[in-house]
Length: 322
Ligand SMILES: *Cc1c(COP(=O)(O)O)cnc(C)c1O
Image (tube, rainbow, N blue to C red):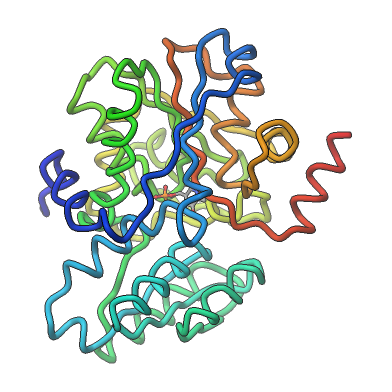
C-alpha cells in the first residue's frame, strides 16, 4: 500500500509551488455569520489563477516530474478545472499536456484549456469514456496526472489548510466541497495534524455523491452521473483508489448533501451579496451554511473552490432566486 501524504508533504508542496500560485484571500461574510450564528469566513479559491484550487495540486505534481517525464508529456482526465490547471502549468513549464474530457464539460472550460495550448480529447458522454481515452494515451507512453488520487496532488491541495491555519489559527470548523476527495484529503491532513478537534465537514451535491455513498458503504461504489449545477463534482472515484478514499474515511467528521436549489441559492448569494463569481461545485459549502445545515463550533472557514461558470448558468441561478 502506498504511503498517504502527511503534513510534511504539504509543507514540501508549499515550498515547491509558492511562486506559481496565489495565496488566496480569506474574508469574513457578515450575512453567512448571521445565518450560522458564528463567524463564517470564505476561502476564495475562485480567485486562484485558472479559477480553481486545482492549480495547487497540478503545480506540485508537474514540478515533481523527472526530466524524462517532462519530455514525454502528460495526460489528464478532467471535468474541466483540473484540465485547465494542468494546461496552465504545462504551458508555464514547457510540458506538453493532453486533456481527456466527457461531453458534460462546459464550453467555457473547454475553450480555456484550448487557449492554453493543451490538446483536448472529447471522448464521449461519461467520465468513464474520458478515463478510457486517457488510459490509451498512457499505454502509448504519456504520464498520467490524476485529478485527486495522487499524493503529490493531495499535498498540493493541502496548502489551503496551511493558509487557513496562518490566517485563522482559532478556526473551529472547516467546510470543504467534496468529490473525488483530493481537496478534502489534503486540507484535512493539514488541519487534523494541527488539532484533531477542528471539525471537518465535506459537502457534496445530492445528485451522485460518490464519496458519500462509498464511505457509507465502506467500499468504492459506482455512481450514476446526473446533470448538476455542480459539474466540477460529478463523476465517480474510479475502480481503484489508493489515497483519497482511505484518507477521507478517516479524517472527515461529517458529510452534508445539498440540492440543486440550494446550490443555485448559494451561487446567487455569492454573486449578489459577496460580489464573487462562483461555479456550482465551488458554492456547495456556502449552500450548506445558507441552508442552516452547518451547526458546529466557530469560527467556520468555508472553502469556495472554483469560479469557472458559464455566464448564462450563473445568470439563470441569480434569476431563479429573485
Ligand atoms: C475538482 C473540484 C472540486 C472537488 O475536488 P476533489 O478533490 O475531486 O474532491 C471541488 N470544487 C471545484 C471547483 C473543483 O474543480
